[in-house]
Image (cartoon, rainbow, N blue to C red; front, top):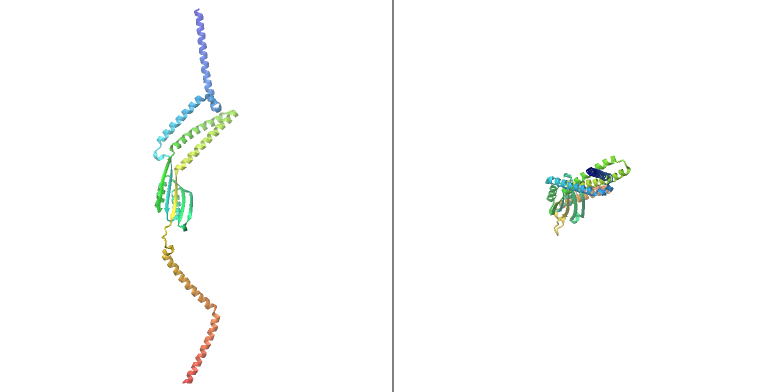
Length: 310
């Protein structure tokens, strides 16, 4: 009896050990299958969703912590801030002001984005608008120069948008996407089936598109933070005294004009006299001969009369 009981216990222990070993092997194989299916067959990884989602959430948390840490390390001078300035000024000479602004922009390594004008100088009022991009470390100096060169400043405002957090987040996302891209390229080299190669290619194209979008946004933010945008509204006002003609105020110009008129009058008379003499020269010669003959005759007559009287 005791022998039978001993045999039963041994058999029971053997069955339990075999079962545990089988469960362990099955669990290991399921884990390997999940990893392989997730890497090469992303669309079939639904049955491993809980583990994948948990891992993805953990990655997101890690990325957020990393981004927060990087933001905290950034100095105030290294923050990404987009500056925009608006000016509304009044000037005496619109064209001279525009020329000066263009020169100041070029000296500071900036460029004109937009420029337009309305009105006519003869009417005494010109309105214009200029938008310039100025390096961030020089745009405040540029604004000061423009204000000092104007007759009156009606409005001057500067606003800033801090995009440091967005830029750092984009950098973190870019690094993660580049890691995924590298892994997919590695999987593509190892893939043997055409079906697996096509699926990896689709995922790679999607990741590369996301990388391009992130890089494009980063380049946009970098450009906006490197160069400040300055918008300048310009108004020209020419003040005139009512009842007084502008020509009457310019005495020196009128004096010069009168002097030139007198010179022109004398030249005209002299020129006309020369034309008359030269043009009438044959007639004048003929009349001169006749006059000379009459003079000689009269002289002889007078001489004879004086002889007879003596």
